[in-house]
Image (cartoon, helix red, strand yellow):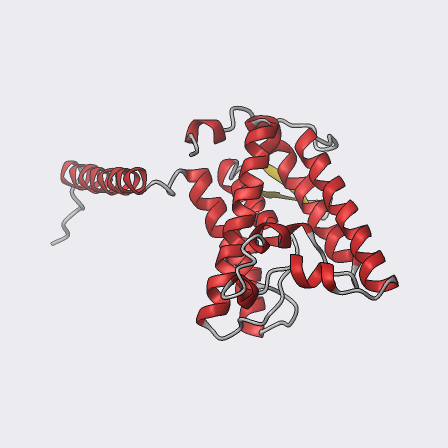
Length: 247
């Protein structure tokens, strides 16, 4: 489905203040859906939209509302606009450079596929761990995939944390993973850990090409051979320069 070369970044420079095409329409779509949510849920007091478009494992099986693994990612908490704002801010901040390098269509495919895979992860987790009635909504799964892809593609690109502190992009990946683990250990309510994990894993697999088992095996084999070669070279240097012997 995906060609790894399409995800390689050739230059570290990008316009941080740009609003690229796909991201612009993703934000518009999320905002339009959210306004509809606010009207129907808070003002008309009709929960049908959230009930049927959010992801509820038992609604998918045995309810057969399979479309929920796609629709849930376009909804956000009607009681907290910050949920939408933070997700869209992260999408803009980390997705801009990816879209510029990949192209709008490829980026949009990546975003949607990772969101769906994160939704499938939520569904499986709900069935396996007895949370089939839990309701999940929000773009966090897809957003976490974008963040992970950003960090993996450009690990040494400087990013200004909170607009002040310059850090390498790879630390964004470590922080995202670490934060997810902490939220899981703390059993923080209102956060879908399975969606976050599903998004991170799917983003990492797609951007590295490891979704393909053959490619994954080749990459592992290459890494093993490189490590073995380094060990051999290190042994040769040790033989050429033996340590001094004291009597």
